Length: 292
Image (cartoon, rainbow, N blue to C red; front, side, top):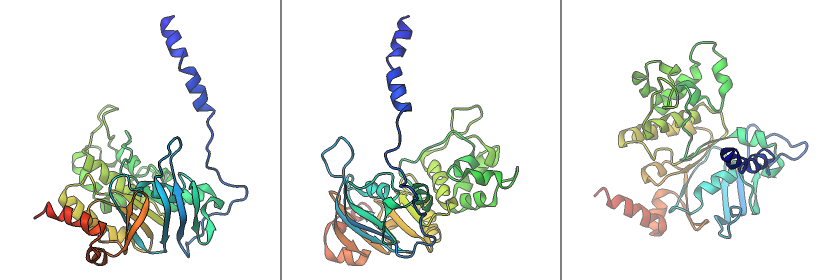
């Protein structure tokens, strides 16, 4: 009776959870995202703070992301970089300001279409206790049914480009190998190996916009260099938003935007920002000093 009484205390939380409904939804008759995107994204005075807090995560943010352009967001922890990527994917709506896509407010488009057009790999990606091929195809799971019992060529290509295929020699069942320790015969991976699997999802996703949030944070120096060489292929012809604390990765961007307290303080290419001797140059010199 005591156990039943204790468990009953949580029933209210369960029912409250089951009654929750999304706060971000598509308006009636919402159009899909244009294919291809012609003008790009424009952040106009965007500000955002998370529910229940008074602190602004992003404040009066302005940015233009054009088709085919690669932009890197740089700044110290808490500068608002990841929040901006979540606003771009419409996981949140701005508290103030607006985001335009091809001249139209992002909130006017069909929500599923917006999220289908944006491929995101966050730094806190999920490690699924599923098969190797399922981990890669988790966002495009229908791909697994396209080739019957074989390994779809798109999954094999994504694994090769992200270096996830280097794990195959230690996976007895190959692409059918269960990952993680939750199930019998599962093989657990290191942080860097899981990250390669997560990167393969970005290669598999046929998205018009790619967001890579610390994509090489858990990789060793050699793997980071090899993944870096493949980024140009991954982002070719697409809009890309890259977040990284490693300046060797940031330098591949067409434009670098430096954030502090949720606002833009500098923007330009690597050479221009180093010559300006501002925040970017300070962060760059601090990191470079560790290699001297």
